[in-house]
Length: 201
Image 1 (spheres, rainbow, N blue to C red):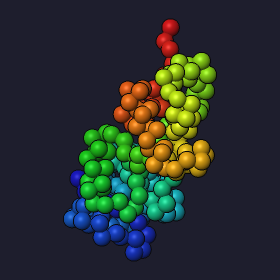
Image 2 (image 1 turned 135 degrees about the horizontal axis):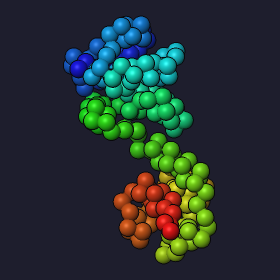
Image 3 (image 1 turned 30 degrees about the vertical axis):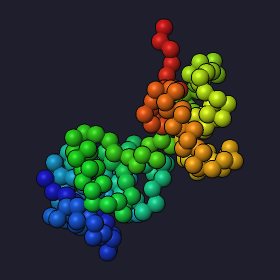
Image 4 (image 1 turned 90 degrees about the vertical axis):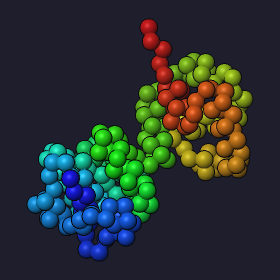
């Protein structure tokens, strides 16, 4: 099993070597010749045709992770849809890269928490949760907590919620703490899943 970082020119980041001392930094052409079953292939999203490389290596039995200098929920979705197991910032600390390696190598999915919340928020909006269902789920919250909960469920960050409701980020965090306690959830992803739950007949 080899750790193969596919990048252009001098894209090599010292922390990649700090995470994996034996990592190989290769061009897309070299990767096509070298990567195979059991390898962990890290692809930079600034490479031309990076999306086409993902299914190529995944099809050979390699685990594919994508690294980006400007992570976004849209790019993360494109990477995962193409067959990547992980998506993170190219400048992630070595500890994060190691964790990502363990998770994806064992068939898990790794996405930055804030991006995952945005992705889940998109799924929440697509589900078209009925107002009666929301009223039931949010009945124990104050009006302000309800507004925060709905904004977070749509995938907004604390900063975006604060701007939208004209409150401070600190106040958003305080409201979220109260929301989590009242609804019996641990984090924003569980909140989204709780609000998106449909009654089974």
